Image (cartoon, rainbow, N blue to C red):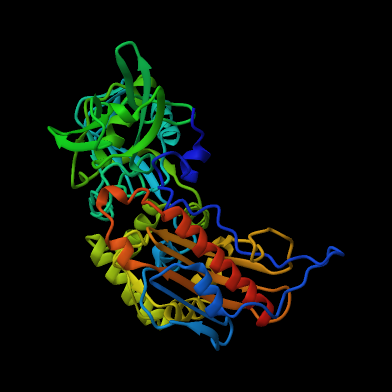
Length: 491
């Protein structure tokens, strides 16, 4: 069984590629003295020497400023507009906090359109979503149990799903392989980060396969997503939609003896509806197959509801695990736009008007490679945000990144670094605040990008490109060295 914490944490196979799983980055800590005390070095290699030694190619740009005054203290290529990758989520968190407020909660509801007599609804039953990005199978099972507690056992009308709280988007970006879980669909009904669990086991003469919506307590099988093992070496997966079903094939040569991974679903409303139907049946409630409705019938009454966690907690997990679906749901909910590009434009306009920083965001997660902002403008936004209520709420949900020394060795330090990492293929970013126990707080942004190398990759290479892991390690080491330098010189 896979725990809910694992699902929400986003570390399941298929949720994030090696290039996008950003949870383990640590910035450098200064080396301790032999006595056990810690000192921050005010000398060491110059930035140019550090950048050259990293051997990243492309562009390395950074800016570090006094977090209170905005005074620029050190910069390289600070005006170069570069992909922010997942550091865009820090902007999305600010945007969501200001537009929605810390009290916002995502809620999933069950409504009925007629009276209940003898355990039967004389009308339709509706599953209504608000876009909750963290809804999982176990919580959906709790919603079914709530419904059963009302005494409802069946309906005379239709079982409807209403997923129009957010626009239906089949994928965040079109330049990723079909099977990667970090590029999910988006709708007003999202379940298990819009991923289905695929498991295979070697059996006599072939493989046994299963597709289910796995949780810790429930694992209902799924019919709308199907898998066929095909004798071939490549491609690894194929996907198509036919007659309302999502049909996958997988290369037999890649399966080995057994395993599992999460695969995306492109019709998340239908997926959520089917899973709720199964969970309701387990509670003794008979529902017909779900059908989508774009409008809520007048007079529908709420009979059960599931309220999501406090908004700051949702944002804290989004920033910790870099969950792309959460970022897109937050941004789309905040903007009310009818599509992802329009929503990204709305956030770009807000950043310019509210924070005085110029940048272009094509989405809210940073997965789209065409987003651009310069290090100087990102720092400008981080400095300006502190004067807003959203900025005050942002710092507590940013991740404590920690520090390491220039050799990658972790040691204790009184200096705290909070921020957000970002990784795409041959793109590595880090933004945030350096907070000494006393003295000057710093705001910083570091963007490393070899766009030409990234653009040369085929779609099939983008899940795990050759040389990508080593490049990212060098970029992260450089980022740590720069932070250690700034903590010693300026903080």
